Amino acid sequence: MTTRVQFDRNGDIDELHTAEVEVPETGPGQVRVQVLYAGLNPVDLTILSGGFGPAKGTRGVGMDFSGIVAEVGEGVEDFSPGQLVFGGYPNHSQAETLLIKDPEKRLDAIPKGLGTDVAGGLYIAGRTAISGIRAIAPAAGETVFVSGASGGVGIIAAQLALGLGLGARVIGTASADNLQLLRALGIDAIEYGDGLEDRLRAAAPNGIQAAYSTRGEDEIALLLGLGVPADRINSIAAGPEVAEKLGVHTSGEAVAQRGDLAWLAKAIAYGHVFVPIGGVFPLTEVQDAYRFLRAGHPIGKVLLKMAPKPFTEEQRTFLTS
Ligand SMILES: NC(=O)c1ccc[n+]([C@@H]2O[C@H](COP(=O)([O-])OP(=O)(O)OC[C@H]3O[C@@H](n4cnc5c(N)ncnc54)[C@H](OP(=O)(O)O)[C@@H]3O)[C@@H](O)[C@H]2O)c1
Image (cartoon, rainbow, N blue to C red; front, side):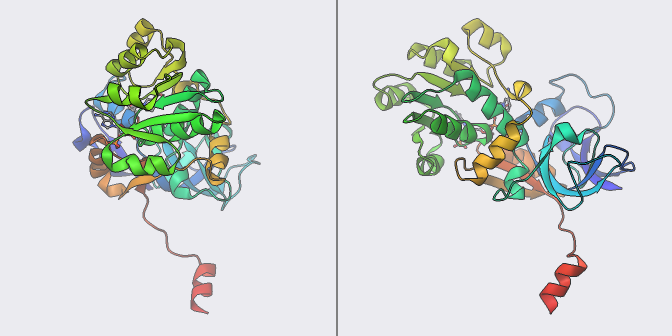
């Protein structure tokens, strides 16, 4: 049995609860993972509310996770027990144990230098950031705008834009409390909210060449008004109809490629990209975790942490001898 987060019907955060469920035997080609951290994403709440269609019966929750390979089935060669791994298991990841049926698609090894905490929140935000940056392809010397640059997706996208465009400038928006963090990452940080247009004109007197928008239609209209070409704007929040009407890209998580996560993991390990963890909650406090995320100011990623397991015999011997 394992403890997992689930809901029985569509609704609000108070529909989320933990339950004990059976985990089947590890079959051929499958990998059993003891989860360490599981990430939260705004899309989980859209699914919970029925935004992607009604739930048919009880459903699991969550996309991102990291953990330790506990067991591998016959024929698995790329993973072995004890290995640290991370990845995505859509609508299932928030559980103490996962049985991954297609590990070759869902798992990557955690490289040296990347913590299991950060790895546990990368699947959606990391792949979304990479896909959108590919779509707008920041070039050397360009000025790039990234909104919500202190959030899960934005903080990764802003640093990718900075690293990609040699000599590029990245202007990122955040609340006053998070401007310092963005400046530490090399991002020209400005506050969102009233007066944003004036601040952008002052910050980029020679114009903005590309933009990664994590907000809605109003922001895209503002960017177009500032002269950013529509085909250099990527929106992950305005929705496909608005994007089509305005002619901007909507490259998000759905068009990410296998290999993106492994690449990002190394970029983080080598210090090109910094991903802060804004909140860590026990699995049993999943409702509070989602309320914190929904408040809209998470600072990077929000994680559920699984209950720690007792030390192994070997660890105990080391500590006591
Ligand atoms: N299409 C896709 O594939 C895809 C994938 C992932 C996410 N998304 C969508 O992308 C959006 C961002 O996701 P996320 O995971 O990065 O969210 P998040 O982690 O909750 O980040 C929210 C960001 O928005 C900023 N913010 C809060 N209130 C704001 C306001 N009034 N005006 C401007 N900025 C404000 C926050 O800044 P402070 O914390 O500094 O206040 C923070 O940087 C969400 O709408 C999500 O649903 C789409």
